[in-house]
Image (cartoon, rainbow, N blue to C red; front, side):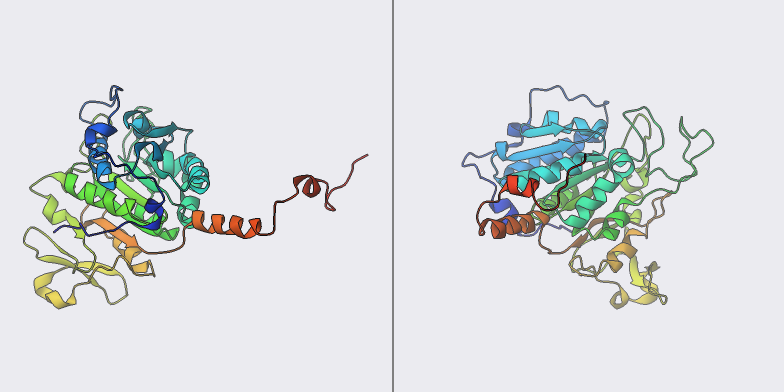
Length: 354
């Protein structure tokens, strides 16, 4: 099943200057040596982004990639666009300022599970709730790779690492649940090794008006190799992956024999289709205003075994972006004429201290 649809050109992208020159993936590659560990999942994500961007037809000088700190944060060096390698966890804040002040730019944030969910946690959730016109790619390898293998905010309970030799006792974040709880308007998950699904998901994110968060399961073959093998192995993936497709019943398994239904207590559960009938299956609605069903879908997966893991777009709803609303307020204020900064500074709400 394909998630590719005719997405048209939304207002956010229509303001970004387009190029008349036909582009290819090569146009988005730099002369910098790509320096990730051989076999790292970041290579696949980089290739996916570089192959997908040409179809947007945007001028490269009007695309910006902003990263924080981590292995994934080298990304801007390898994109032949503008880029900012910023500070730990603060990429969403820096990107917010750029997106609000420059509607002619397509702004992307590259971050990892440590960068975005530890020191950068508050910046991430506030960008999501404000609905800033950003596309946030969260590389989740469930480990700190750059600092050599400590447990991260998404590592499973019991994770043995250099910093948790007896096993982690921290309960991990579920990035999809977190984003939905922050009322993000576009929330999706994909996998580094599934090129078609990755590109389809990026395409939909790029066309979304407002903040789009895409969690990408990404293998760290040095410090957390095989973390997502059940979802990648040809012998197991069809029985573990729940591919969400808007408007279609949620059904999966190598023979299509498993599905998702609403339980008697209102939660969601995985069942054998033969036992309940195909008509009982939940039909996925990514456009539902209430995020509660999308949240319930995000809770289906076992955080350790990864059984019953949904991928695809969980939520895709329309809401005015933060950028639009800020510029509208500025336009309204401008109608009253230019402000007087000196009068504001020396206004009635000031006093002198002897």
